[in-house]
Length: 486
Image (tube, rainbow, N blue to C red; front, side):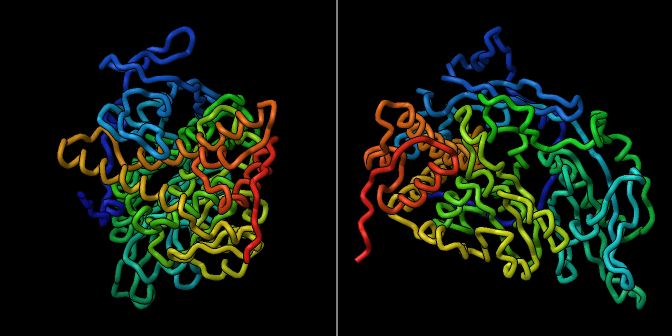
């Protein structure tokens, strides 16, 4: 088997040229809304309509239809439970290309945060000057960052998402106590394109450390990339405005669910959590509040937040529209306590250990690879069963096959992010397709055979299934025996 290093790609980002980012398979939509076949003439199977959100125009826009991986006859390597695998060479286009979305630069604000020995964290400079940046000085400079040389941080600020690059430079200054620390960051209605500016922000924070007060490059950047937001209400736009979505859409494959494509992001997530991914998967599908603790640096932990969100993707129209939206908060600190108290479902990370004591704010607490919950009703979900381990084995096999194909055949048309997302989306689709069919039948009774067909264990996953039926409002009866423990 071929192994792949998981080191530095997460931290050694390069800005991707715009022409590479905008390449996509030409979509010639027919009058009925279906997508034309790809250039090689193969049929991509059934499709489902997705709705994109164009924040510059303030309304929904149609995007390319999404090929259903479940029914494609050309994906001849079996995936989980016989579902075709997305990783064979015939899967010639990435998820991003399949969705066919195109987002424009929409930078709402650019700012510089500094650490002052007398005042603490403070916003040193920003554009526009009247933008509300309350709390950004703490979000863009994580607690404990004084112990590291550099970092990057994703965070959420109201309806906006932010990315900041932090750097710490030793200086011979008693006033600065031997260290100069700054962060340079941006805000946008979407986090999907923030990665484009990682390299720029890294350069600018180094520039700010070496030449404090030189803001000309940042001013030019803002003028070039600033957003044109719709003049509605307070001028804010939500990242995922569910009120504008029609029921029959693929809500979890919305562009907002794509963050970046950092090489090694999913690979490191898999290596880090191992089989515990299956535990996180169940909590994600149940829309639980998941809080991940880690000391700095926090950038890689922000990727774990994204990966956790990817576990809950469902592409069956109408499924999940009534459940709490599963949103990434990325990095949080004590200033976010009030906001978190109102959230019913989220994934976030923090460097502040005090959150572990705030049990009313979360359902699941992840400390290193240790996944735990203080809620008695969720304790059974922490235990891995044989079916969970089998699913993880299949995921590992598909990943190894992908790596082998990339190295031996030079096939780079598929990537680990697509494999990871599609693996769990297929598993989720299988569960909800079965549940929907049973609920619509004359006898809406879930049997052990149904549960096994969903890729679950009739006994060990009973609690998970009961919670799933209740949360998603599926009118089916579970009649599997639940023998008492001896």
